[in-house]
Length: 549
Image 1 (cartoon, one colour):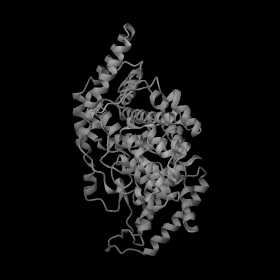
Image 2 (spheres, one colour):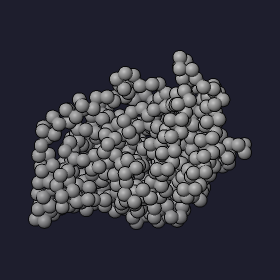
Image 3 (cartoon, helix red, strand yellow):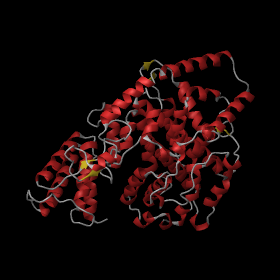
Image 4 (cartoon, one colour):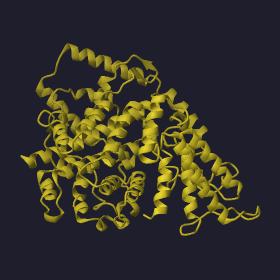
């Protein structure tokens, strides 16, 4: 990177400073640079269409800067930067150069933008969290905005992710982002792939690696098998897979490096689930997040219609009809919770009965189909980052495959996994544990419009159902409760989002818990994401423990 590039990077980074003077100085330099570029194009006569750059054209760099300014005008947590970006874009437009506009309606395709926190209207605590996130990454991404429904969790999530990607650790920075790309690509999550391609290049990664996994070092290629098994069938992981990576002569991994890689893989597999489950849209400054085309007369361009925007009134009418259809859904669920609590108090099932109920639920979970069970063909852009694209989630017992039940009493996160991670990658076990606890215990004691409700039973049923799909059993849990609390449409959503997230649709998101708030559905998605991550980690850490002993 030459000195000029370094100066430009430093100026953009300074926009994340908590010091208003530093932000002001950086913004002044950026404004001057932008206007110099605009003036070099020259004033545009009214009869000539405004220029819009194509790749390789002298103005293509300017377009990238304008897209970034658009993102900052909407997403920067500092109002001085937002206002200055709006002013600068207006100046550019007044000069006759076309400026970009956002595509789509906010951070999520599933949740109306007006319900998601606006960066200009948050409480002081959330403001501070947003500022920290922006300072660390130079952006406040759509995932963070949707997680902003639950600031306590968001704080824990960002702290953990920051540590994994940017703090001291066994792996170099470009390896960390490349592993993130590999993991997200397994689920065809172009949103996360694109974010980390940019971050990978930003920290000095070799662009040749991005041509495909076969262009990356042998050491990373060797991680492909672990990535594949963890993402789709973690119960097949054995200590032989671990040994293969640790004893690969010149391309071998150290134990500490492998723990770091495993945590990153499981983090991004589960984050892909959250991304698809919440319908996260491309970042404003990324491909698919903005357009330079002017809006049509009706204020919608073809892209908007293709993205399903512009039909708000229709969606609203459909939504109102649905609510009347499902009136009483919440009350039914609350009544079942009450009855189950009473049954628990009256009698306790025997150990044999509890084991039978687990096996029954595990078998039934295999019969729950994911979204239409159609095949998704990954685009070349994403599939080049992994091998064997046909390898996906398969239920335990298909084609006669039998997997022994993983008993948490024999190997648990609390008693085994936590200490192993902390020993080999200090502090990360603690950070992960706080994040798991935060998602599992998070409650506002509400269900839809009802207050003062204890939701512990429901949260535990969701968490344990996900682990049950992975063959993981808690001896002290009555799996008969799951069928009482989780209806079929909810189970289809859970299974799709956890096992084949790329198949999650808006219809599926809308079809479960139709009387609940969007914030409650996002909370469900946090539970699904963390339960999935812990399930994958348990299988990986057990295999590493077996190798070590």
